Image (tube, each protein chain N blue to C red):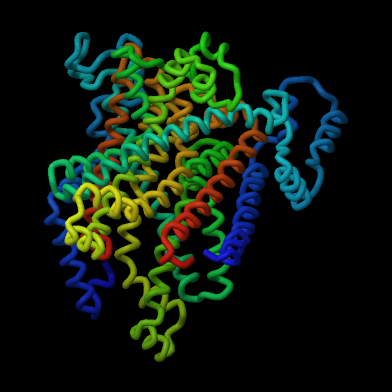
Length: 296
Length: 337
């Protein structure tokens, strides 16, 4: 944190105190560890996965999980309709979910911060234009917007990230705008203006560091929704295309076999649920620690 | 809320709705591949015929002009022809709409009747085991991917226990006997006294409605709990208690009435997000509604239908949010928008 190291000492200790408060919340801290495990799984997938996620073996078609009759501990969670190892595909699928989640939130947060700062600090026509665009984008239910655009742009990794970022930036933008409006008249901003600091300096160096906490909290909260949304798009066949393993598409693949092979759909769904739940719990803990206004 | 304020808020909707229509139009314009080529498919046509089709569709006109034609037509509920059905898009949509509305309403009802009592109980028994379970439950509710939860329900209730049907809206033999009056199967079968058909339709709708309503249930429960906690701290509740009024009466009459204000508002807003959930849930359960039609249309490149549906969903969403706003002010006179 750049602002933790400079002369504003109170910001430093506040940040550390908040971090300690977060670590003391055992449930939230544990969830953060779960998220971390998923991240490690994604990054080191080639070393962790027992099999090649794309390797098909028709002799293992719909092979049940290891503990069931006909199972094999070399393929602990069983195999899908093409005889691919479900566990390996889940491990590789974590890459897609996490990469898309992080990429969308990163792009959206950067764009949202810039737009929100401009709208909240500069006001005037800049604010009007940005706020109007925000209102219009809020006029679309998220999934409908994404489905409509994906249908037009075609599936693919880059397109998913773009489509979700087109809508996602609105959320950090509104937060940043509101926070900026709240602090723009405070003494330290006045002081910076009085000594002749440029608008850019005031926005990025004075205001931004002081409103960063709520923005980061919102970013983590939104991550969970973005991951579910990506899974939903993949489930509908509008996401990352086969043979790349993605959790949503794996659930969809299993739909045809729910009569006899429940494991094909079930396990990828468990992975989505675990990751999303862990992010949700951890982000609630972050919010309680960093944004006391929200704590009950 | 004063009438002028209401009119002002209504006028604010206009630029938003116009912006929405521009985005939907641009979505179509961005589409790779030419609609005429899609329509032709693998039929043999001369370049002159192709040129004429292009002119008939107005595709040779400048973009801005095409937008205004699109807008004008949309205002008259004319969205062109569905290539796939060879019928007007609006007819196809209207045909599918009742099933979607019926499912959405059912999901809302389920969400409201479970979320409100659970939220009140969680607030009253704050920090009890029940409250903890409810909290975990609501976190699960917002974290469960709907498409997966739906499949789990199917595997359990339709496949394993064989209690409920796997897909569709009603069994064929019942579907043909119920005359469409309101086009809502549950109501139509009931008013015609066809109770077997009603039971069958209910069995079909229950799993998709639960799946669709789950996130809404989770959110409404949280909102009710928070609002109830707030209300229970208010002076007039203490006063009512001091007067010696019956505890249950205070809870369900005095407190709940005020605690419901945010619940109702959020319910109206969340109904909008049910619209998106419809596409997923209808796909999972083979529900013959608009959502599934849209998803299918994407894969057959039936773009006019996708465009019309996206516009319809967005407009409904904007109007629902507007309604939520109004509702909030009407219910809560202290708030001035």
